[in-house]
Length: 169
Image (cartoon, rainbow, N blue to C red):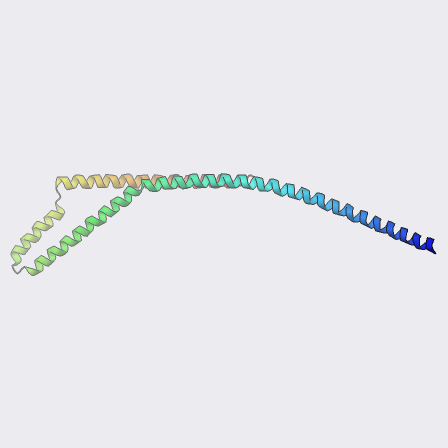
């Protein structure tokens, strides 16, 4: 009876060892596959990081380009601000003139004053004409710079879109 029990134990142990060998073999295959997957993911992450670095460098270049173009259109905004100040001054002067005209009881004298003041606004001195020409020239230059900046920015955006697309698309 002892031999039979020993025999049953030996067969059970052999079956257990065989089962463990099969399980360990499957675990070994799973580990090999996991190692291959980790290597593949690692290489893909390296490629993605390299592309992300390139994209960030291009974005920084584009941002510098946009900042430079914004700096070139600053004179345009300065010219617009000067123009709005001039218009405000004309409005204030015309209000004062109308107020003076309304207070004065002698219409004839008021009409003369009104005509003289109106002439000041419509007939400009040579200095004022020269100043306006300079402002006009600055405004034209700023508009041209703005148009050029917009065109260059559009070209850079198109160029960066082409570069940032992965190959094969």
